[in-house]
Length: 167
Image 1 (cartoon, rainbow, N blue to C red):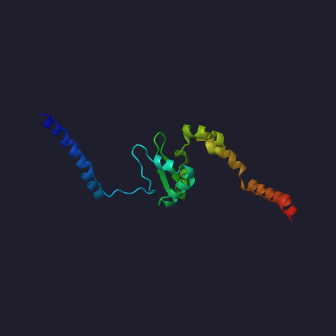
Image 2: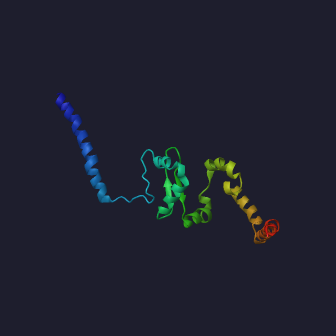
């Protein structure tokens, strides 16, 4: 009786092990999974946390290397407890987000308060009607005439105060 019970428990466990270790890899080899473009392995529970921790001391260099190595010049990160993050170095993506479809990419209630100490509540940290108002205000300041006057004044000041005394 004990032997029968042991066999009933062991046989399914052995079959499960065989199917997981032998049959499944054979089937996935036939499918040829597409490799990730940036070469990072994502753990089902930890996401890219291991790679982040390993490269935390050189995050900017590391992420730049990954983006440059990616054929699309973009990549996505996932860390548990955080939202998925996408980083792009592709000019077409930047134009799509900042010009073509700007309204589809709001900063949202989670980003604006976090960045408020650094960026304030100006054009770089606002959405919707506030952003539109900020943009209209800024566009009046950055006309060709006002920029030309600013450059002339700045160059004259630099020449008068720094170059002439040096010469």
